[in-house]
Amino acid sequence: MSRLSEERADTMTTRRQASPAQFVHDFFTDLTEQVVFAEADTAGAMAKFYTPDIVQISDGIRLDWDKLLAHMRPARKTLTGGRFSVEVHEAIASGDTIATRFTLRVTSGKGRRIDTEVFMFASFTPDGRMRQARQLTRSLPDD
Image 1 (tube, rainbow, N blue to C red):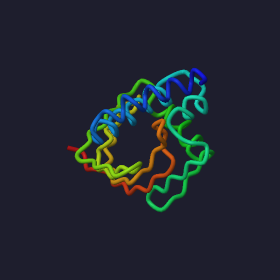
Image 2: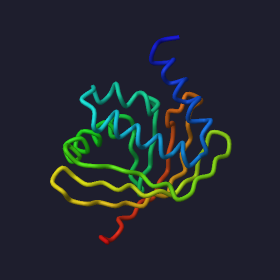
Image 3: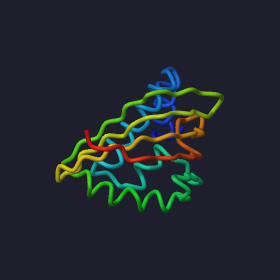
């Protein structure tokens, strides 16, 4: 087993032992820290979180691996010097699928606050990578 496979297995074991809500929290927190905030190669870091054949449909827009990778690059620029948090309101799991509602709270490096509520159904591989997701999002008003 390669080092990356071992890391994925360890991560998945830890995540699967958590509640679905904790899994979702950890997935998006780790994704942001390791893909968006880190200096690491974007594609290499993304491989820890998404399968090569990922299909994510967000608000009717279909994103495959290449489109997700392209999305990460401006996210990195926006969040440089910023902050990110995820608040999971509810999550349930059945087999490899999790249904969840959560809020992403982002403050850009320039201080702009963006809060987004996400409703998502996602399937994950046994090693914890997202294989498929369908989600609806809505921007939340400023407090």
